[in-house]
Amino acid sequence: MITYLTVTFSTEGKRPSEVLSALHNLGFETTTGSYDCLYRWPQKATVEEAVYLADKVHATLRGMGVLFKLETVSDEI
Image (cartoon, rainbow, N blue to C red; front, side):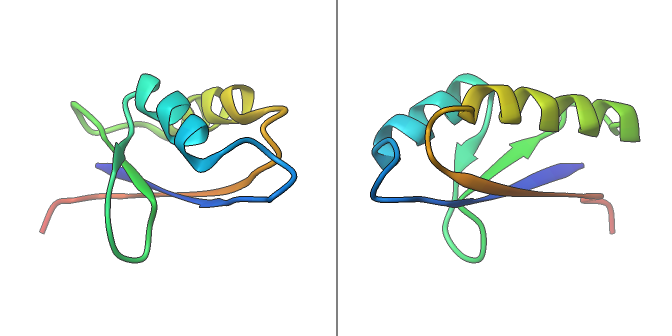
């Protein structure tokens, strides 16, 4: 499973480099394309685990002046 993250930055918030550094500390990788970052789950995640990750992202980004969107999908074919 992979969780994709899109971040909307604000000129009134933290610098993108600071935001991305905080997300890297949670285990996110930067990527190119439609998303800014992705999180590769070590195993198939439950809905509860995905919500817990969203809570961690929310707490980490609090006060940084950014908006975020998460999308968790199965990477199985």
